[in-house]
Length: 81
Image (cartoon, rainbow, N blue to C red; front, side, top):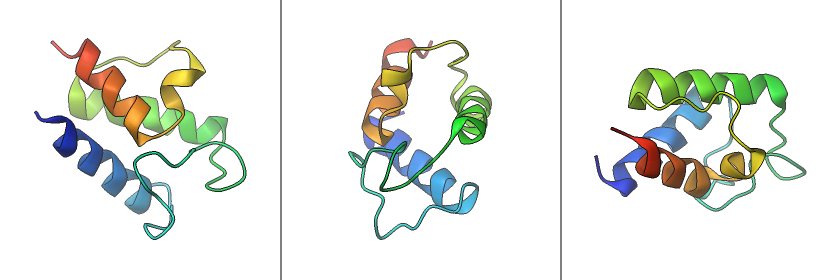
């Protein structure tokens, strides 16, 4: 699966499951903090989505891997079978 496809799936998930506005969500937009404002409960949903859809476990992964769609996609790319 290409990196762009991974990012596209992640963005669709953030918009449909976590209610993030697609107009403010870019691949490099910080997910946690002022702009988007996701929290630790959302991070559990991200972990579950990544595991279910990409077969990559993010449980216990350092928070810098959750900074943006770009960083999550890079982690998936690096760790997928």
